[in-house]
Length: 420
Image (tube, rainbow, N blue to C red; front, side, top):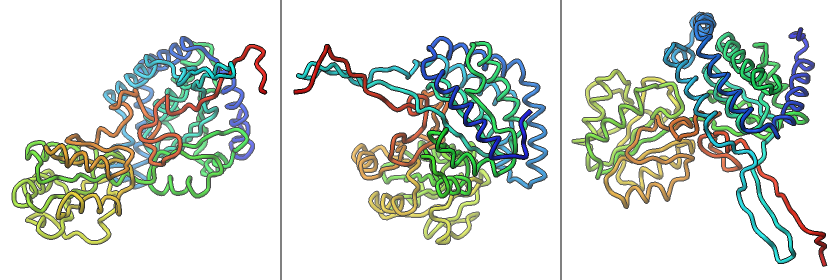
């Protein structure tokens, strides 16, 4: 029985067992990892009633804690969302195994034959908040990429994450892989997070998945390298050459489909030449859908509120959007550079040159044209799932799937070759 009162000892033990498991996973064959993931998928579906019952406890906890409607939506699991988890596990299972993939291969005049091949990172710590499906996503992707993982879910999703984790362990057992390959921190105590951030001897990278408070804490205090995005301040720019139907459909989906995810649109920029048509029509559609539009200047109309300087660069994660007219595409780009978070930004236009300019002059991890920013998701990118969206420029960027959870090593072969 784990001593939950001695957090440093608890976390040190979890770290040591994860490191030992990672050494075995690094050479586990693709068939065993595939079997573990299929077994986990089958267990999640077979035990869905248990997962929903556990989730009901978390929803009660969230209500008592006063979580917003958007946060409660992120927390909630139903049969459709569990089916989505199962589909994600199966999709990751069926993907090519990244470990051992030859990235480059060449011969040198010296007689050396050199290969650069993918290799696991080792042990990954994932710290996340209210979305319990991250338990399945992160566990699957780390296993697929040959990494052991330490999962630390949020206090809100404690019971749901535990039920899902048990299914992942079922898959590991069935495939004869070490159970310690996927571990869940068994306490809500925040001291466990502090420990995980400094476990440099056993943890190779930390991935925080949550709001600004969590990610800021991790980036400030981690001694272990971090893959992270601080905020998803997502912009949509409607260009003067936009198609009005595409503009309306994309903006409405990007804002209202799910407001609490990092790909939800938070700021709408509209070219001044189309304010009286597409601009006002789009704002009216948002208002009619119940969105609180904080509008500036000529975009203000019946049902909107007045935008203030605090609305720019703000992640609302709610049925709220900031809206602003801009003089041209370069003004839109300048606004995004100033207030964006390098996560996801979109242009709506039929002008290829405008799209090319937008793509060339912005450096967000994901740039889109005529498509909802809610597609900023590893599953929608064909990765099966994601462990998060990375907005930094080192190692991983954008949706972090199995391939992004690997590094590489060089395999060098000679034939008694010596250097002159």
